[in-house]
Image (cartoon, rainbow, N blue to C red; front, side, top):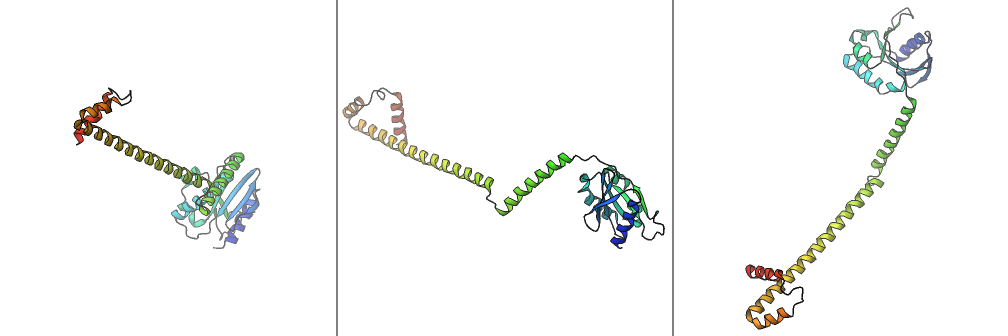
Length: 228
């Protein structure tokens, strides 16, 4: 089926009803103006369409639906009995049926389902488009440079945490070593005391004031004896 013949037939029919073509996106997609409304038209030339094909065409239109006040799909006559009217009305997408074999240009096209117009929010659309552009730039940067600014910052934070953990482990090692030395000193002191009580007493007398009569000294001594 010729797309050129179908498009010319439909455009002529719409022009007779006051619409005018303002842009052609490609062979199958046309933008028209109807007063202050913009109308998106997608032309299907599938000679023997199926229900799934019709649904796919609707999905393609919905990608651009909110960029235009009205939206239509033009199907050949053979699609008439396969169209889910409720689905199209809920999507606010209209349907034209065309017949290239018709000898009457006025009856060659029929508006089977009118498109329900929507009010465009241009400012919101512009903001949304800008945000989408920003996100696309971020995605492209991630694809081209996996270690972008944000990723590098994350890696830097992770490395800093690793350094901190290493320093903590180092300090714990030093503390463990000091505790082992202190325990060794307590064992040595306890042995000397058992061998020479007089020397032990002298050593005890030479302890700093804060260790003399300190109950923790006895606790450490008992612990050393128990370990032996």
